[in-house]
Length: 284
Image 1 (cartoon, rainbow, N blue to C red):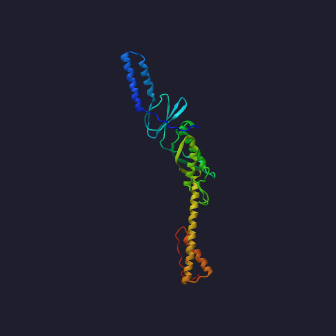
Image 2 (tube, rainbow, N blue to C red):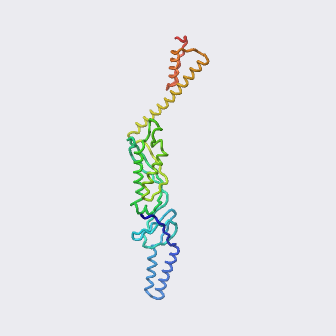
Image 3 (tube, one colour):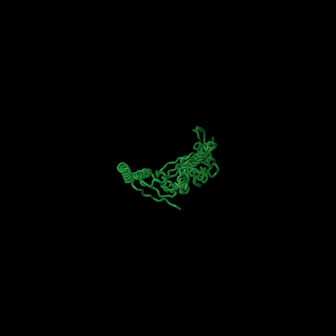
């Protein structure tokens, strides 16, 4: 397997002076000596002109001579190479890719919309130029495939217990790391280095979004009720203990049950309670 190799070309400024001198000698020879052989010198200088090129910072040129890979120029500047070299420009800059939102099914079959944000750059110019047909399109297609595979590996959410299973919503750090590993493995064939990959958009699909919202609201209400009841029980227990310790009133089991019932209604009710004042005895 051929790997990327760095090519160190000749400085373009030196060769520019050389071409200028050849043209000067050729023209002067024809004028002074009327010798057509000096036209070959001018022709040589003209043939050398296409060999000039420049490389911008974080850019590169892949050099190929009649199908034979001759290396990659990564140094920035003005250079000259064999004019018969084919030169393919490949950028080494970091790039952002924000994928389209794709509809897929999560691990439990719920349709969801998911999108990925990918930061990548070319590391191996040989692979990018020759191992795949179009490395930019390759990044898009493989990113889409990786997102679909990731979404099918995790449920969107877990309503029973958030700690029992890793989900797309609750385990973003672990999910993003898994996405980055998956993309790195897929894009390595094209010489692409994944700098960062993360989920940029995540939501239920429109056909189940409203139902799932109601389910989330119900789960939140149940959790809140659980806390309210738990707190109310503690308050009732504390009230009975204080009454008993301070000997404010002596209650039998039936009256304790009635007091507990009344306190639980007051503490757990959604609306304000209107108290009823008993002006009679405890038995009425």
